Image (cartoon, rainbow, N blue to C red; front, side):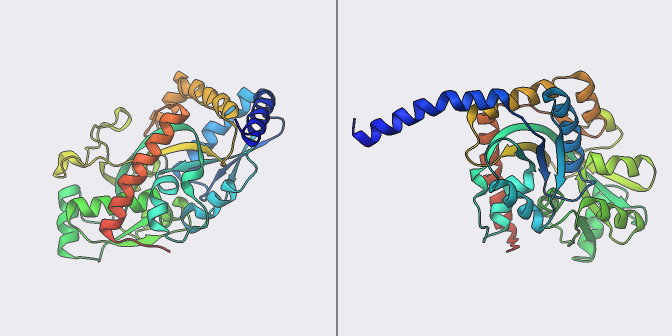
Length: 322
């Protein structure tokens, strides 16, 4: 063993107990849970639900901090460059952690460097349309879109958002062409959809189901292979002539590069506990979300696989945002 290697080994052995000790005393002040989008979308709704329970478990406030902009890349970079002490975390999702590396070619940080903490939930997309649109099911929507290529407009919470890439997948699967209208968040997009300014979207249950149940919007289908118990009256897209269509949003917590493993393990343990609680699971299910706890390593492998999947789709569709 060289002298340099020996010194490195000694330093690591010395720091290990300190790292464990810090993990045991963490958090010693409020924790910032960054949502890289505006309030009102699925990411924000799920983050607030988790933050409430984490605050109760750890006895420190977990504060949701909305940092929107550039398809979630602005807030993501802030978290990426934050101190790796567990007091800054991010609720990431399919767009920020899987699609953005392909959508944004000039990112100044490496999304793959985030430390995976815990997958929180899978959320089926609801294909919803304004009541002003004549389409009443998926086949009639596809027929209308094919008669008028590029005329129908679909909204999303921003470039690179889950709604954006989900609609890219839908258009590829159905051979249709519709025009994307990105908004600065899901909330304002849903307002314009209800008013009829845009025609449709494909978004998660938390923002979609309330206006559907209120009769303000019409749900044509859901993007999971199976119907949801909480919305069993809404057929799947797959059973309406698009076989195998299975596009789920997913949401999970990540930490800055270098966050110590003992701290990550402690936070993952708390998240797993929360996701196993019957009242919390029921709360998610009423919003079209399904709790899906994973260990950090498993979550990391899942993110990597999703990055490959969505990167391939984005390249096929030739979608580039910067």
